[in-house]
Image (tube, rainbow, N blue to C red; front, side, top):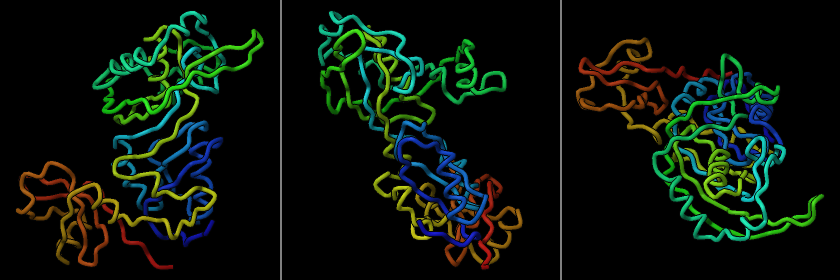
Amino acid sequence: MTRIEGTRSGILLVDKPQGITSHDVVSRTRRLAGTRKVGHAGTLDPMATGLLLLGINHSTRLLTFLVGLDKEYVATIRLGSSTSTDDAEGEVVETADQETLDALIPIDVERAIGNLRGIIQQVPSSVSAIKVKGKRAYALARAGETVELAARTVTISAFEILDMSLTSEHTFDGPREHWDVSVRVKCSSGTYIRALARDLGVALGVGGHLTQLRRTRIGPFSVTEAPALENLDVGAALLSPAAVATHLFMSYHLSEQQTLDLGHGKRILTPELTGQSKPVAALAPDGRLVGLMEVTSEGAKSLVNFPEDQPT
C-alpha cells in the first residue's frame, strides 16, 4: 500500500475482501490518503466481496451521483434451507424435507427465477440497514424485535443461472442435500440479493439463502479495474473527478470567464445545451472539473462545485 498527499481528490475503485466491513475499507483508505475526507457509494456486507467506490476529499461530492447507479453481482444461492438473516451468517430456521428437495429440478428453478425478473416488489431483509423509527433494521432484529419493512419497487434486468449442483453436507441429523445455484444478477440500486435468494426459496417451497456474493460492477465501473485492498496504491489508482464525471455525464468545456462565473455560483449562458435534462460536467480550459451543472431555460447553474486541489 502506498500513501498519497492529503490534498488530492478523486474516485477510487477498490476490490473489497471477505470478512471486513465497508467502513474498515474507508478507515484504511483514510490512513493511506492522509485525509479524513473519505466516503463510499454503497456498502457491502462483511460476507460479500467486490467493487467499492470511494471518494477522496472534494470528490466525496460525486458520491451522491454514484449511489444510484445500477449494479451487477455474481452470487451463490443455497436452496433447501432458510436462515434468520437470509444469508450464511444467520442461523438456520427452517429446512426442506428431503422428498420435496429431491423432486426439485433445474427447470423449476429457471421458471421461478423468471418470475423475479423485471420490475418487481421486494421486501428487504429484516437485517438490512434501512432505518425504522430512527434505528437500523438490523439493530432492531438482532435485539429480538420484530421488524416489518415495506416492499419497494426494484428492477431486475438480468437474473441468470451460471451453474447448479446438488451437493451434500453432514449435520447432527445426518447427511443432507441442497442445491447450490450460481447466478448473475443485474439490478437497480437498492436491490437486496439476499432477498432474491429468500424469495426464490419461498417460491420453490424449499427455502433459500445466500452463501456467496460478489459485486462485479457499479454503473460503468468494473471490479476488473479495481485493485485488491492489500495491493492498493492510492496515488496510482486514483481517478480524477473530471475523468469520472465525463464517464457519467455529457461534458461542456468552459471559457475562462465561465469558469470564474460558475465557480462563484453565477448562472452562465449555454445555448448549445438547450433541452439537456441531465447534469452536465463542466470542465475548465485546463481540463479540471469545475462542477456539475443543471441546464434551464435561463442558462446553466451549478448543482455542485469542485474546488481545485491546492498544492502542499
